[in-house]
Structures are given as structure tokens and as C-alpha cells.
Length: 328
Image 1 (spheres, rainbow, N blue to C red):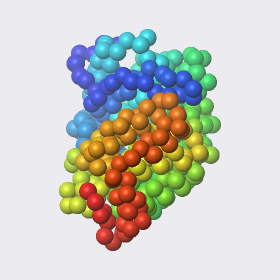
Image 2: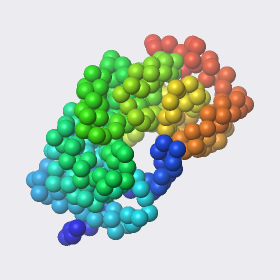
Image 3: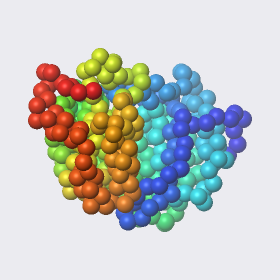
């Protein structure tokens, strides 16, 4: 692949991911794209990261340049999994031209690929050729369709997140992806706007039970306050507090299946946090659990002593929708 411009993705990094009982070297890429066609989610700042209006050919040229940079900087033999994100949906043809999807499939053939998209772009016509282009027989399921469902509660998804689709559409997309031979990964958002801590915990517990029949992988994302978002507007005015790490641990402990969780901004005021004293060890433990799936580790973390645990328990019992949040 040759490009006459040099351009980096929005972000690209190497790490480890748990897959079944294996730990895989993983490359995560966030491509700058034509922009999310929905672009209304209350908590998302990536929707602002887009190219200005331009032709499909020019957009493809920029995307090819980013991919060329990735292939120069990260040798293919050094990782087995690739996670692909964009400003919105990798399978949206107006955001990512189909010709570039073909380039990506050719570049990462033989890798285990997880690509994020909204459910309306999951069609057999798109997924079947993409899977065939990726698949070289190395994986039973070579491609996973990752959807930011956030919650199974349609009212919360609409009012607190403004996601623009309902749970039935997610189920339909999951059915289509499975029929095409792809797996399904669900991204969940813990504690969006307008929920008390208790409401958020209860919603996640219900959501996890609801999605298990339709998903193969689950990742729970504790909400972080990103810049230039509606969520930040409320947070700056004291009308929102990110979730407690104690709540995150409780959900991981009680989940009937293993969930991954990377508490971005953990221990900081914009991210999931407790009091500042216990945060570092809890964030580290949550990330370790995502890799080792050790339930005993979660139990030990929940048993660790800290004065803020009483505060968290008080919040769970006493915070009300009309006077939340009670703490910062």
C-alpha cells in the first residue's frame, strides 16, 4: 500500500486482551474518519474528531495514509488481535468508504478482528465479504461486530445517552452478525447522565442478564467525563458524578459471565473514582481482573478497608433522583 501523504490515526497502541482462556497481543486503532452519522450521544467526544466535508476519494486517501502509518509502526507478527474504532461506525459507508474496508481486510487477514459499529450498518451484504476477506482459517470466529449498546433499557438509552436505536435493533443486528459468521461484542456504559448510583448499578445488572443470550463478549465501560460533551456541561455544574469504583467491583463480582473493564480516567475526578486513597489499587485490580478473570481478586478488592466504603454505601441507600449527586 502506497500513500502520498503521511498521517497518524487518532490513536494506536499495543496491549493485551483476554480471549477465551488465552491472553492475546492486541493492536487497538482509532481511525479519524468522515465522522459519526448520528453524532448526538451525550457523553462522546470522538464524534468531534472527523475530517471536514470532502469527496469519498479524498477520505479514502486520508484513511489509507493512516493505515500505512499503522503498518509501518507495528509489525504484523507482533500481535494476533486488532480492535478497530472510528469517530462513529467502521461499517458506515459514508464514514468509511467500502474500498477502504477492503484494504483493512487485506492488511489484517488472519488476525482476530473486532470492529465497532452502530446496529443499522450490520448487514449480511457487508459482513459476509468482510469476514471472507479476513478469514484464513486461523480462528473459529475471525470477526466480531462490536456495538455500543450501553444499556438494554430503551428509556435510559434514549433519555440519558441519546443513542438513537432501541434494544430490538441491537438484537436484530446481533442475529444478522451471527448468521453471517461473525461474533458479537457488546459495550455497556455504566452510570450515564441522570441516574443515581443505585439506579445505575441496578440497570447494569439487568442489562447483563438481558444481553447474555445475544452476545459473545461483553465490555463494561464506567462513564468518564470527556471534554466538549453534554455530560461535561452537567458535570461542571455539579449535576453529575462518575461512578464509584466500589460499584464497578460489585458489578464484576455479580456478573454471571466474565466482563472486561478498563476504567479510563480511574481515580481521577473525571473518571470512576472513590476517595483518592484507595483508587490506585482498585483500578489496577480491575484491569488485572480483565486479563486473568480471577473472581477471588475482585472479592479481595471489595474486602479491602477504606473509610470511603461507608460513604458509598450511604449513597446507594440515600441518593435520590431529585437531589443527586450527593458527592463529587
